[in-house]
Length: 394
Image 1 (cartoon, rainbow, N blue to C red):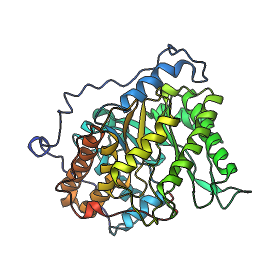
Image 2: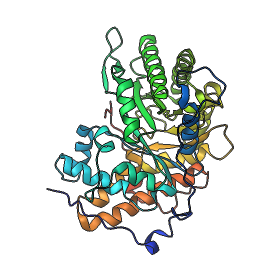
Image 3: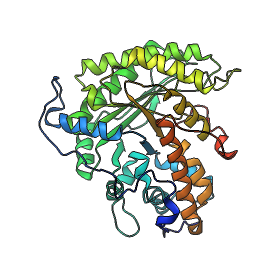
Image 4: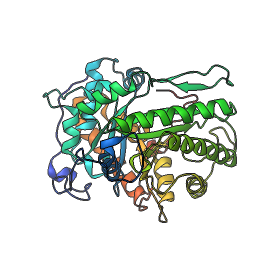
């Protein structure tokens, strides 16, 4: 089945109820390259001021990140779920649907793209990067090369992609990207081993330093997988261990903390644990971990959803914003923003406007959660369905 690449723009009346302010009124100034003013030795050189401005722009009130950086193979699985073939035309069509949603910038401050998408344009010839900039959304890029078995570990993984990263990052910057993302994982059922934790932390730190040196704000993401039947206390223990190691190596590599963003997992019990924690409990444990391990110099904590349902991810984020935090506590969701969109769209041109509205509904819900003002009243049963996949990769 081929997807139609013609999209219907939402008219002003149909989108006015969603926007907190018109995107034409929204202040939008993308950072320009400038000289160093932050007092801290770093390899990021003349990009330092720009990195700090970019990070602050992404970590702005009521806004978060849309993650659409799935590999072509994973994007193909998403398309297959609605009966579409995994072709470049269909991937372009779906990403065009997302990135041309009018008013998206009211709730989304950054979008993580896969390399293919960074270089693509709409069917009308407009670069996706420019579509984002028109909505005051900062373009980002996934730069890791995926997971590979870690020799000498307890059946664990390490993340590839450091080879050639500097030259790739320079090219991504020229194309318009201003932040980067690198995902590595830690498995609690596998230990985790000291080797795996150190490898994850060191790889993230090297990536972060290289990214900053080339003008990209690094998102630091050691995902602690939900796999397992362990209690929430065990997750807290491992999360503290991992983040202590990560910040040790970030400092060793002279990474500017004011010019990074974090993408942690929420501290929850294992997906197979008999007791499911409430949003309030998850917020308590997660914020405890962050306060013990993350310096207040870091501008933003952009949580991953990790297979939670759309509503779960939003409720947990809302619970974490019921009291002031030293950082911007927000979201960087993929499935928790896209699931309803895909099911609404179904690859049919007549559903394009409704699918864009579904994206705005989910984006607004998470915007309200970032402000601590979300209510799950009126949420659909579909939005409450979990999306956990054991050993999830993308």
